[in-house]
Amino acid sequence: MRPVLDEALLDDTGRLLDADRVGVLRGAATAGAQVRATWAAAQEAGIAGLSGLRPRALVLLARPGPERAVAAITAALLEPTCPCPVVVTGSAPPWLGPLDVVVVSHRGSERDPADAAIAEAVDRAVRRNAHVVLTGPPDGPAPAAAAGRAIQVAPRVPVMDGLAAPTDLAAAYATARALDLLDVDGEALADRLDDEAERSGPRHEAFVAPAKALALRLAEHTPLLWGTDPTAIAVAGYGTVALAAHAGVVAHAGGLSAAVGVPALAARLDGGTGIDSIFADPFDDPGPDGPPPRLVVVTVAEDVPTRRLAQDAERRWPAADRLELDDLELAGPGVGRDAVRAGVLALRLDLAALYLGLATGSLGADPEAERDPDAVPGIGA
Image: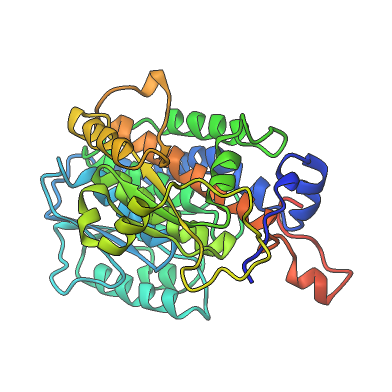
């Protein structure tokens, strides 16, 4: 049986905060603070020392999960205009050398195989004299492997696992800015993230909170997050990671222009209205077809071809939802604007996934507290 959505929970602030026993909503709301702190930490760590460098390649080294998804967003932003290749990987390429810049995201875990693999890659990078930027705790396998030969950007805002994407994004953006590859203002990004966290905060009703509204639309459906442009596709990919991690929901990410590559999914969209029947029984067995699809058209870029593609999708699938940023100050094309829009939409997807997880009971319980009634609640409780 599928988890049943408690829709009333999202509009009852008291119940919602009670359900959030480990403080995930507070953790997500620190996105702006994470960006400000990381931006400052990068400057203090000497990120400006990369200025004037013309790298042969920019390597974004990240473990699987949200870290890899954030790296994919950064790569998608940079690739159209970047004079060097941008590589997203979980291991050090064999050709690494002194002309390359490597941005590394790690968790500082001594027991995690993924962090061990990252540490091995860092060791290879520093031995080959690549320029390395480390994002993560100051201790752990990766910093030990760097042995003081990396720019260490240590997080200053503590958050639980799965909610540190703004830190990783800020470190990658700061590095790209220092290399003159991305014109983005860290403070502007932080301000927009603060605005998004406020708009979608737990005290606002669903009809005014974009993340809550999105959570309700995705509930009891199979989300199809289809992007109109490369950065939007990467943001959609991040959304699938967030939905799986926070709500236990399996989603599909891809590009609208590649919909022909998934004919069965496209056929299900073409064959359905996308409108739930008033006679639908949520306690009924879903049958072989499973949850019906819900198309969300994700848009980051604001160029004419992108808008035309989104409009074509709306005509073909009128019930589709749009995930885009309606901000006049950020209107218009530009990689810097796209960078901010991508960060804000990633936060909205995080919050939507958290609300969906809380409203279906898939998220919120503190396992330590359940085993030990005297345990201290998690961050933000």
